[in-house]
Image 1 (cartoon, helix red, strand yellow):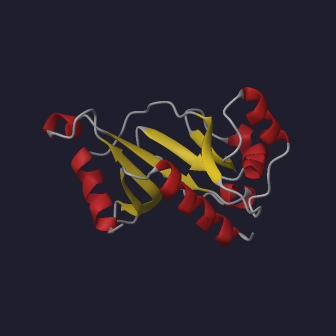
Image 2 (tube, one colour):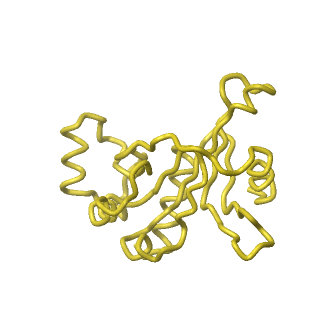
Image 3 (tube, helix red, strand yellow):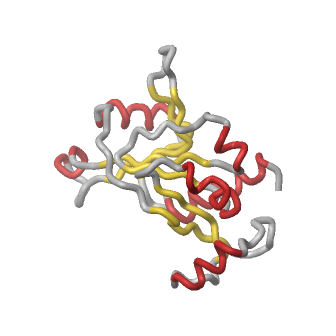
Length: 168
């Protein structure tokens, strides 16, 4: 798979496996109309508890940046982690190549075959010998690293508006 196909594969998997049934938007522009505009690949809003006024006001934002390969990771683009939780989404091979360069507190999601369980031994085996993502199999996302909760620097209303404006 080339970079474009890999990015589409990862994005589609994220939408169906991780974001399905949740409040999310793609290609979210932040600080639009300024010289410091940023774009987040996917942004999710997670209300706290029941969706009501207080649940919305206490909600958190989760940002996902899709990286198709090591070169994409090293490009310097798409590190717009402005949510309380933030993830890279990348193939296992890319994760192995850049894992020591990922900032503390940033989570990582990688695709693994659906038939792999969540035991440490099975995940370690997939890490050591990653299945080629071109392989015709069912896939799921697995969190190789969990994110650490961070403080948000943008107002909830502003980020919800940015998600709404993205149109997806």
